[in-house]
Length: 440
Ligand code: SF4
Image (cartoon, rainbow, N blue to C red):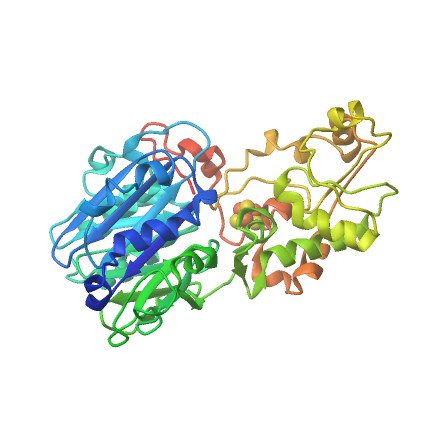
């Protein structure tokens, strides 16, 4: 999992002290939950790109000592999460590459599933890649592309790429947002209105009230909110949105859309104050809790979220079952018993995970997934609960009030929207001799 953000500001914003790099860094702060391993920022002043990235949290990587030197009206930012191995500087993003026709920086959320095939297309092969990520490979392919224009380069390279990719791409003059044809990972477009931040208006940026708008791209709407941008719309599956200074965004549909947004984003990963598919995620999770109470009621004295991220669902469960809701004990079952609980009923506001994810969520291989390896009763005994139940896929859809066809449910039901090559089962190191790691 990763968080990505992009910003293009007109000159009037800059004149008033707002830099695209600072806006992108601030937007990224709201996406910290999507990746805590590394952070980075790439900016363009219209002529050249500058990049700073490092391992660590956004607040320590993109602090006030770094930001003033990263000047320009165009910026992209990225935070990365990868659970095993290769926590090395080279694998931090954005990636950067200087090709014969362009300098390019890329921030990527998702996993590609045909990395081996793509590596076969790279002149010079693995030896040319300084980092071991699929994003580094994609960046090299884009930089090598002889097309004069970055949009044309994307139009030539993207049809060869399979898997999950929401991208922010930076060249000297543009920030381009891209979403794969399935739209596995979210990406939204926002507008920083020119007149909304006048000298007397409350807001983060000042402007003289005239001139062009600023534009943002963010993994989640929470990133737009923190910088004061208005949500405009989702970048559509199979679409690229081109942001240039002083122009309205341009849209290019590069592939037919087959929407399959990761339902796990709505169940768990994304921030509860974000909106996806028109749904506020706190509200969606509360409704999942209500569905869970209907599907699997429990006789109990109180409802408690474990861990904190279960709070909206626990609130919904409490509401639907008319049981009091208590916070405070983020504990495992045995500790609850030691604290005096007579019975502990565990309810999970998601279906059991039976299958690995190849599209950017770091779930384990099938043999390591507890639901794939043990029966429900065995899991209940393993965790020491008196009862255990999961929300059904039908229950998730009832809570969202949206059709199954809009989402990827593959880790729950094994129906992968994009076929996954067999060797992708070893996800982390697909290419044993020339490892190109995949990550979110
Ligand atoms: Fe999301 Fe699961 Fe699909 Fe991966 S397999 S994209 S985690 S729903």
